[in-house]
Image (cartoon, rainbow, N blue to C red; front, side):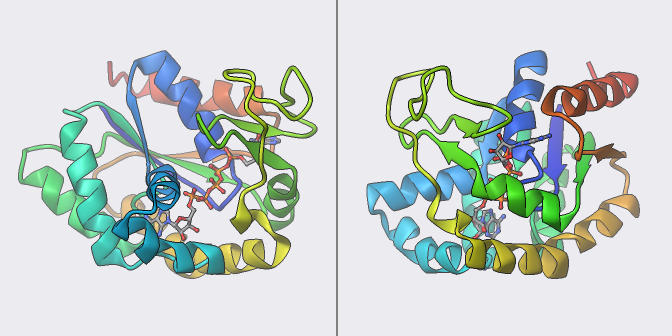
Length: 217
Ligand code: AP5
């Protein structure tokens, strides 16, 4: 089972991926998380990606496609893709790579929420630099203020959650990523439209219900 999560920055893709994974036992493959790990490690890939991410732009397709197709092939069939594909070119290349193995995307979950809501969510997001757990200062608070529930490490704000970078990320989303909804609607993978402006648990309930209706196993 392979599921793609679409939606603007801050729509709740990472938050909801965790819950889909818990339910279906899938692997979470997040292009953003992979880039952040590469940047922390100071790798060549991280150095290539950093300037784009800091500016709220997309990392070039060729860099992302080779990194992600390799990670997906290693996941041996069961994964949720978070943040990839993010352009029509990436989606076409992913489809080609999957088709070569007689495989395809089973469902596309599209989180729909407006720009004002996501901009406000991102300013209050905090995450753990070690394990990647994500919190919100109002809606998903850590048990102890400022510390990760999993490992007690101090939470940080992502550099690309600064207001001016968020504006660029939203612009990039509307220009390059939103057209993917049309791409998938014209293909064979069912697209599940989810209203993501609701409370976190209510969004999860709607996603799991719609996935269950597809009877993917
Ligand atoms: P990436 O890390 O993928 O960032 P993103 O898509 O902008 O998504 P976010 O991680 O910001 O948000 P999310 O939707 O996961 O929301 P979350 O669950 O955290 O990518 C970062 C950068 O890497 C890109 O800008 C680009 O440069 C590069 N990149 C990555 N993939 C690429 C690709 N394929 N091609 C090219 N470049 C690529 O939730 C946000 C906050 O809201 C949290 O605090 C959460 O607790 C809270 N929240 C969640 N749901 C709700 C709710 N229902 N109500 C209230 N609060 C909520």
